[in-house]
Length: 471
Image 1 (cartoon, helix red, strand yellow):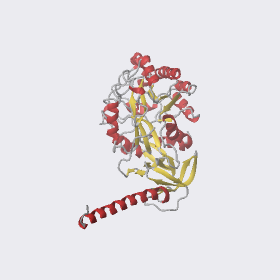
Image 2 (image 1 turned 180 degrees about the vertical axis):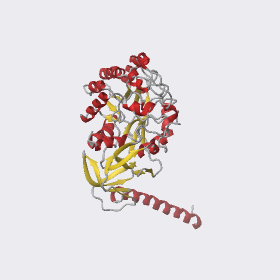
Image 3 (image 1 turned 180 degrees about the horizontal axis):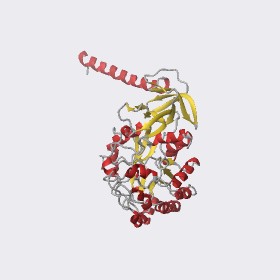
Image 4 (image 1 turned 30 degrees about the horizontal axis):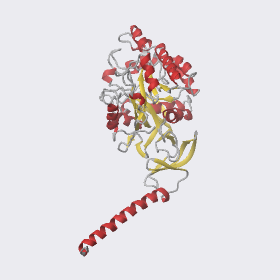
């Protein structure tokens, strides 16, 4: 049936416009993939950490990826001049407690991640001992939703183990944004606890993800409560002594080896554990913290009082020295901050009513850079501990290295910048740091997350760019 011209012309115009739109979109895709030499960000004149060496070269970023490593003459809408700066793979902190949901007066996901990128951290693993705990799929999904469009760094969340949820732990392999399973063998902040050997064995044997363990023996902790001296935080490491840690670590390693499962022991603090774990590396990796590499008893308690209180405790210099030996000999696998903030009001309570934990996500990297400048470890060792090893151990995709087609997560550093860390600098809601008035040399001056500059010269310069990590 014939149509009047007045009906045919608009229809024909729509077809022409639609065809042109489709062609234009197709052309743009082909241009970006094959023809374009433009970049969303060019980083020029910096020394890039590539293959264990510092190489002076340029980086061309396109979207969230590193598109080119090499000399780039082309212009971009954005050019970052990194002359005399060091460009590192994005720093990863694999142990933080951001207190949301629950104690958001001390921290939340937004404020904690803001502190992270100010300290050069581009990705992090957040812990499940919240209120309610992240120990079922419903609460896990709630946390994923809480993080959406609010976190400045990339992120993943631990799934908390309980004596009752062991069946769920065998079904987490494809859970988006899940970095692993957290097991508290000894009690700490929160109510997650798996302290009976039979239950610990069920968790480790059934888990289809790596199990990261707070390793203290709950039975010994209860027996040794008699060593707690009211009003004297110096008694904290006497109560939670080295055997409390060693007994638990010996147990979890034995179970992991029996079932040929991978475990990761968190915040190792004792020389006994270091010597033991050095001989059991097949199934076990382990972490220590910058606090335990920078402070020791009794000085830390003399200076900081209950602000130095954490679990496991800061110990005497013989343990500090053995941890450094393990760092220098590449026995330690990972550095994590164990960022665990509490308000000043709570930390100032009389011991033992004062809570354990201290903030650290904003200071972990500057403090360790200072140790690099003081020749306590090499830059290569630090990158192994905070970039490459976390990706290898936990299976993080496309991060930890400066490589073409890898994610453009980068930390840019001025190795000569001197900075005095102050409470006033801390972005965490708690508003304090155990490193107050601590002078460091070497400081992050820019943090790039998913190809976007999110921190520059100590200021947040873009909206939250964080996304869940892939494994």
